Length: 565
Image 1 (cartoon, rainbow, N blue to C red):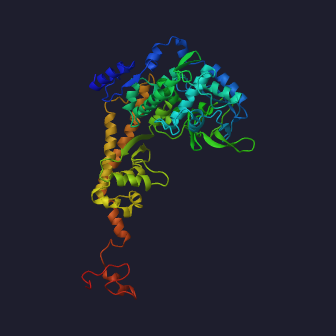
Image 2: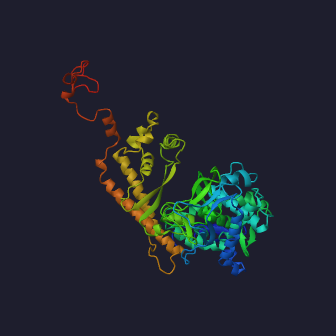
Image 3: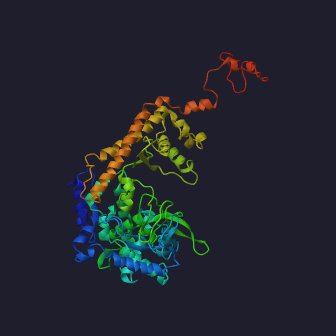
């Protein structure tokens, strides 16, 4: 055991906690603190083992469909679907329930539309300005962002549903139809036990560490954000009123962690996997969130208007322009263009498009060095001179892509950012105040050969670092369990290696052609007409300039050796 781990073990042993250390030897361990309701201890102390198996999905779907019927047309404006057991591959544990067509749905038809009503739609604004308004500080800004606010709403609904309203915050006010719909929806969500198999946030520590070493998008950063918010909420909110914020609740015959570290992790996995960004806001919309993903012929959840007069705003599922559904067929949506790592971290699965490796994506992160002597000048440019009303942070992440027909060329925005980051030495004059309004535009084109080489080195080094972190890990995928965390991580790893390698190959080719590029000084001289030698034939006499002479003319330089003192 490392020295730091021994110290941490000593500390937490005096605070009533247990501590676990991962045994995977990757050189980077993330000690996880957990109390009596950690996934490990929670599972081992639960006696209702039968309830820990997959829920009675048909009965749950039936109850939810009854609530859907009562919610029409006030909350659900169009409904040509019902919730049922998914008709996709039964071996895929990630597909439980889905939306099944109750009537024929033609190409381009609306299958489901739900109004933006705070009684049923969960949003960060609802959390901050209504439900948690008098409990959280006015300017509360958690590390988990909008997903964290929606997760708090999910926990509140869980507490209210499980307790019959005696626990949780009694907001928002709901009509009975909306209350029944939300309660039935909460019961239909995958339980924490199920989500331990379905989502990386709840995977075992060994599997999480494998994922950490398999992708440039680091799951530990996300888990650390969750831990930070839990620590703050536990100390200042939850522990002060356990009647309102219970640590555990009973639902569907199973003990659910609620306002606790494990409960918040579960709620976060629900929020990130089911929320959609539509009409300028992240929203978790019951029933719409039941739609499963497909790659081809489907559309993402969209915003639109609905109702008798077409004036009510809401979200809708529309069949694709090339796809129709017969009664009894499952209706799908697209979860959007995401990388393999993003699909796994957000939704807990990999679609066929990601598994095919036709488009491979990795993420590179760069930051402005605080020890840079020009740090303040560069930070000022990023904050005020880049994009209107959208200041750039000194730390930026960019995707690198490998796909058919693309040679690994990096994102131009990444190159532009790095040119500013690496600006220095003889090029530092561009940071003078006289260029302040133009310098960001200057960075869109090569500045100097040395600057361009530094940029390419930074990209190459970052890609190489990502590849090194994945060394020694098996990329082959076994046929025994293609949905296991190890198999999913192997696919992500293989995809990102391909993207990183392709980018390195492109950068190496660019390094060999640095002397062929046109840099700032050459472009500037050309703009001033000073990029060529003086030609006597272009003098005033030969061009017929009545106001000049052979020594000086508009747009011309004085002839060499003819200076009149």
